[in-house]
Length: 415
Ligand SMILES: *Cc1c(COP(=O)(O)O)cnc(C)c1O
Image (tube, rainbow, N blue to C red; front, side, top):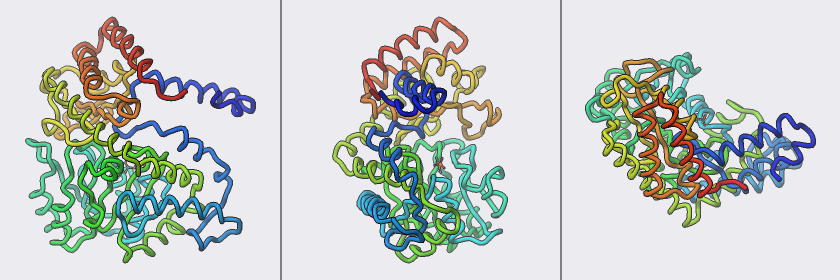
């Protein structure tokens, strides 16, 4: 039985953990940034390494007794280098946001200039949003997607870069359904003599498997999360050329963090090994094929997709053209009642609020992990549209919930 030892010590927490396992088994996780790690990754994360202080890096720690921590961290580093082809890798960031924080700390002074994509156009809080520390200590200017095409407006980006003279340009996004042209952003960065940070948080797994263009060797810094399209447990990672290795390592520790979360680094090592397999490459390809099949089907039903489709694992739909009186939040709540868990999202040219936006964001990474293929994903698109057409109709929601229950039974996840 999972959580058996926790149950003996703490029934209240065990109840919640058991319920969460059931929730993941019995619902469809379609939040584009979520996935399901293997039991092996989760066991590594729950290991005795949670007890170990290992400030420093393999072979040069500030504490005794680090020989096994060294082994684990070195395995994670070596596998990451193989996966992404990077010169230098730091696997210690506690999350993708901390990875970005460390790059800024390494390369910028307070007041320096960040040029990044607007949050409502698909950017991320850690790219200079006023609510994030990055928006408070750096000077931030933003670029946008073209309102007509939904693709990054490269000409606007180049013009803004000339005027603003940024110290760093950030690419890589949270709600962008298209392949990112890292080379083109690098050209802009070169033209204005700025660093280029490519934040591949969402697409780490797609890049590792070669189903999305890689910014490694193109951008100066590449950061990512290890729990999204790659299933290596919650955490972050930084990759760069050897030339910046010491700056980055010193920025992560002691600059931004204390002792590394060695248990999470063990999870990363195991997840990276899994991702080096042929099965993982097939998984990443299927994730993208599933999103494409779902996007086509949603459009057949008349739903308007930002950029007209997807190249990656996510779909961003704008409800306004087809369902002007329905908000993203309404759909999110109705779908959650039916066991389909996704999120309302702002869309470019948003006319509502960030809390009750006009769009929905759908992702296929977690569905693909549980074995869904194009045909199942087309059916999920049909189920979603039933609810989008009638979010207030309880009998529709009940019908969809019944089918979700059958599908999750048919494609089991955790024992
Ligand atoms: C998810 C995400 C991050 C990092 O998120 P964490 O929760 O801190 O791991 C960073 N950048 C982008 C673009 C993201 O989508």
